Amino acid sequence: MSAVSPRVAVPKRPRVRPGAISLTALTYAIALLVFFPVLWTVLTAFKKEADAAATPPTFFFHATFANFQAVFDADYFTYFKNTLLLAGGSTLLALVLGLPAAYSLAFHPSKHTPKVLSWVLSTKMLPAVGALIPLVVIYKRVGLFDTRLGMILLYAAFNLPLVIWMMRSFFADLPKEILEASIVDGAGFFRIMTRIVLPLTAPGLAATALLSLIFSWNEFLLAVNLTAANSGTLPVFISGFQTSEGLFFAKMSAASTLAVAPVILAGWLAQRSLVRGLTFGAVK
Image (cartoon, rainbow, N blue to C red; front, side, top):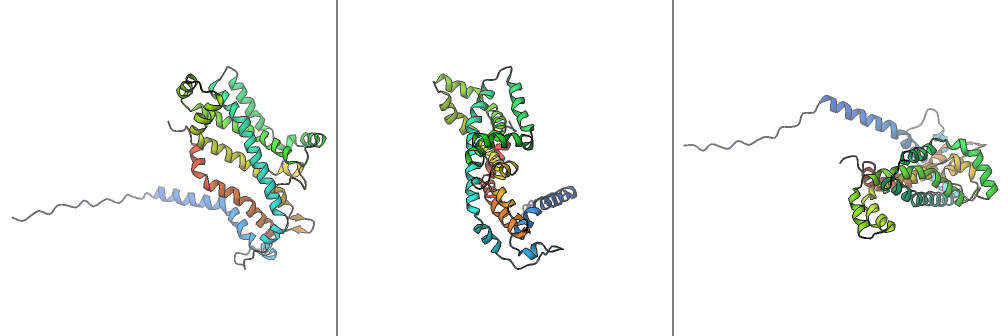
């Protein structure tokens, strides 16, 4: 009597649908289209000015670091320090002012709460150019023109609606029973905020702070009209490579690469918190 060998189950390979392949190819094509300007800017930063302005564009060239050295010699670090102080300071101020407002709107709503939220949102509908002339006049009269304090206050005001709306949404998703239990235990506002609310909404807080930081870091219109030598930011510094002698594409690309590198690095390091924050409360 011969032994019957057991059958070995062969796992079936998942079928690859043509639609999935087409969707993947389309996704890569769109990603390449979106990131190509960034890639081209980085490549141009390593070209000579003649190669950068060549027509048709040159894809093969001898790389040089002279553009980066020229950017550093043009007082890059002063503008970088200004941008870091303005973006960081305005983000911190917007969070300090916006978190209590978001807390109140989320946990102590009234019949006027929808109107307040609509009013806060409406302040973002005014384009910056619409308030530019009054801001220039006011800033020159009160002595805030070309000052770091003036730009921090202005950027914080522009970021405040974003902070209030986002953090109010994150706070509203928290179970109110946790706060009620804390109040029964005698916890005050500061302790509830620092020990309970903010730790539970840390991903949302990180996402809100990063978005506010990016806005302040990249803002150009207000900075170029309200600053000069003392508090100029990196976008203003980049625009300085367009002179009466011409447009220096290679040096401008090098300055742009150095300007966006810190933000891209911060976004890459905080991408997990950013994704968690932007999807916070989406899945119950």
